[in-house]
Amino acid sequence: MQGDLLFGEPYGVIGVDEAGKGDYFGPLVVAACFAHEQIEREFASFGLRESKRTSDSRAFVLEKQIKRISPHQVIVIGPERYNELHAKIRNLNRLLAWGHARALENLLAQVNPIEVISDQFGDKRLIENALMARGRGVKLTQMHRAESAPAVAAASILARAEFLRRLSALSAQYGMELPKGAGSMVDEAGRKFIKEKGPDELVMIAKLHFKNTQRILGRDDT
Image 1 (cartoon, one colour):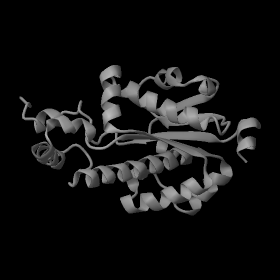
Image 2: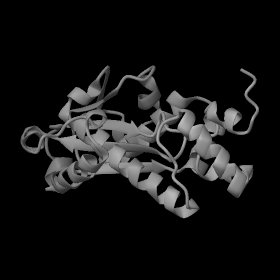
Image 3: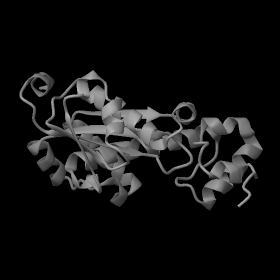
């Protein structure tokens, strides 16, 4: 099947999406998922919806169903690596493009789609320029609310489920709950974390360029 998907005439699409972009704790996860008409019909049969409208427990159920029928790739950029990349790239959109390109590059080794669809985040050339040789001939479409495309909705579920799994693993590793998001509960957890583990360990669990870091460390002058 994979040989046909790769070497036959182009068909189907790849959707790409990410999770963890707005979460202080945990990794950035990028997923790419391939779909054609038959796969899309199967997505519809088990009620696939974009991850933002799906509960955490449901995301894990959908993840298994998606992985069973659709070629996919999931890229995890852990907090330590994320902080290294952000310090080098100095731009979240460029970092996102780098992650999207890695996931796309890996999946394009398996399938030969007509189009790649992603959410709109800045200049589409950020992804086009980041794509390696396998991706340069593929049409790239960026659109607002890209999750309306089934392949993107599926990618969003894969990214969400993996993010939740990794965040839970970090919580277990450090023996404390690391909440989602970037609000006051996150600040509270961060202060507790550095009190127990020290500020140097924050790089292992958090995206340090967020404003939460300054608040957690008591350096917020606003």
